[in-house]
Image 1 (spheres, rainbow, N blue to C red):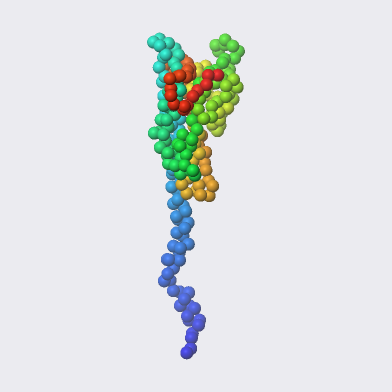
Image 2 (image 1 turned 90 degrees about the vertical axis):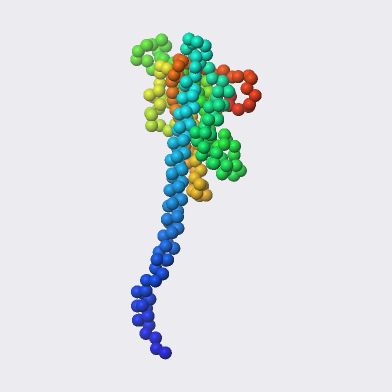
Length: 233
């Protein structure tokens, strides 16, 4: 039997049957990987927005504290209030519940996110000045997982600086007291985390009290739950 080898090779080279299956075999893994990364990216954007919403909502709740008595210029928050504000984060940012449940071992959601609050007062320099003052930021009281330190002036940094418990944006300095809420969450992608990827999301919100000039912290001795507690500096 005679075989025309050149003709058979030419036929093989020109035969396109099965080419689509081969192309799909090469392209499909890349497309699946891109799709999974797209899901992780979308979830990261959502988590970033919700972390910011949680910080903003907690700051607003504290900033709207009512006067301690009619006509007073000061208000008071207790550990009961702070625990309520802290727990509201689970409603504003439900993704933290899923993230905590995926950890190995699973975590209570409150251990998967760090929320800190503080009341910051600004001392004018020189003391008693009314114009052209500079200010020193001092923490009056603090509470939460990563509280701002007492008796150590907070640094003035640019508005675009990475949030830090040791810094404040220069635009918030003086003369009014501010409420500071810091939220730190480490985002663990659903798929990329298998490759050791984790992305920290840090957001800080600064807000002046709305109805009073000063908001102080005072612990409630009747609160039975050993949760959030504050400290007066």
